[in-house]
Length: 296
Image 1: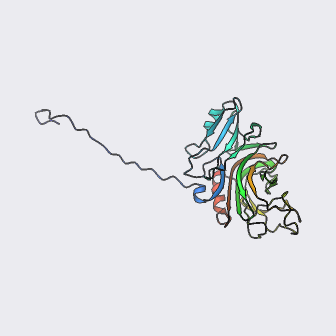
Image 2: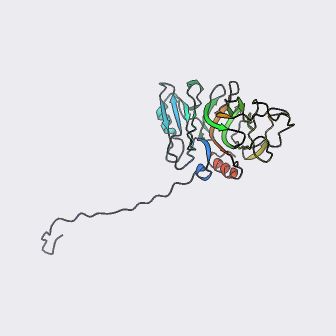
Image 3: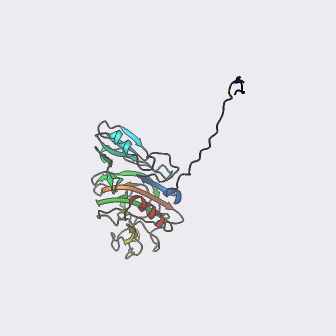
């Protein structure tokens, strides 16, 4: 600061500048819009507030494991998998539950872990990362308490050629899969309230304790949706048993030896409730899933 004669009038004062920055709120994701899931696994981020990892991956050269998260777009961080695995194959040890219930799907036996990386690149289906189940013994188990008074709804994205996609090792039961032998991506959407409702989407299972065997046919209430289209599941014939026994776990990739799933999986979301199934939300959930995976 000087006057006209250039005489110095002291040290210049420090100038402070305050800058205000703003950022847009994170966009709602599927679980933000459709809350209350019991378990949720995906190769994408499903909840904007979820801060955990997507999966734990083992590379089969040194058998080291690494937790893998999401990239800036909310997709599985495939670059991190490639860095971790290098030229080795990569297998999923844990598929983390994004529902907030910590129902992580896990497999501790190396030879039974689904593959995610083939030594060169992450395995994909329709341009999105996918877990490959070998049809022999690959499975992931997670906690899921069920009883006959619950409504149940499940949404899954997979492509396979044979085997049972989802079952319960507790009771050696499986859930009828309308795309059991179809090599097509699909969304499977089911729900139940006991075993005697005709107006609810219903998970239908066999090989459990005999119940309702006097019922001539239950074809009137076992429906599902395959690639957005309703289909009738008809795996059980008249007089086949139903089970009302509880289970405490579910298995992605089969339910017992000899019935393993051969194909890939990209997403599985399960809801269960004592008051309602997801029938009112089904269209919105399917639209969200299809917008990401471009199934149909």
